[in-house]
Image (cartoon, rainbow, N blue to C red):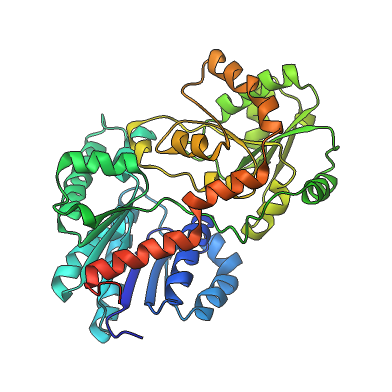
Length: 412
């Protein structure tokens, strides 16, 4: 192993969260096998940590990754984050005193506050893995109301920091070509090579191709008959995903395909989805709502004919790459979604579904008219084309290139 391949990786997302399991651990496992040595610091939410600690510890230890979990502070707003920053700073300094690292790799903005400053103090290369436009996401998602002077100050603080991170980083990673074009327009990253697009990838080994056999087994398990049209939704709903609009679309779909079921595979509260659906005019039997651990998801998803997700359109979403899109297309399941980030280009080039521009009845009808075509799509072809975008190994290779670039190893 090269002596200059020691990386301190900071994530404000927990490894026991679904996101950590899909968008951090698989990358670090792959990069560890290429000779990079990680110490990983992450913030863990109590309930997730209690239930998945053993499993995640085992996976990380198996790849030789040193994991330092810190307890995530939820409340009160702002003060909780400041407290977490103090804990992160203290933990990083303890580790940096006793170890020689070459790179500090920061996932998103919160960890970059500490990482960018420590990189200067300890002479480390700093990677700003920005993901989306985080501060804008907080505003667009209604989490920070700029009419509140405190949130207005915080927003301005993070936008100043964003410029600093982009200027100071030895490499920047974003998720979409749209984000790259926006950042290039700001002329903050002096060297184009330093700004890399790496979309959220999917583990094609985990999300295997849907087959007639897997579809029938999944439907049997869910008590759904073979002739039912199954529309699925995967993942949490949270701030961004438009439940009411998805239910409106499903209501229109039911007018054409009366024997239809909306399957939710989600950690969201069942009662919330059910109440929203009933008030939209659906009936209890129109829905199946259940939670699944990551490894159980492909089996349940196999029941689907079509997958759907509508995301609140906003400036910040130009920088977003929905993890679920790669996972669904990896299974060969066609999607109906709306256009954010690079989504419409991906859907078009994989021929993996329909991306609508807005949530008018006209757009819904246009998508519904495409459903007969989606029924006859070659699932294996969708998977094959999606592989070019979302293959996990491709993302691992792209990160390796970023590391070589900042370490100036020239591919060594």
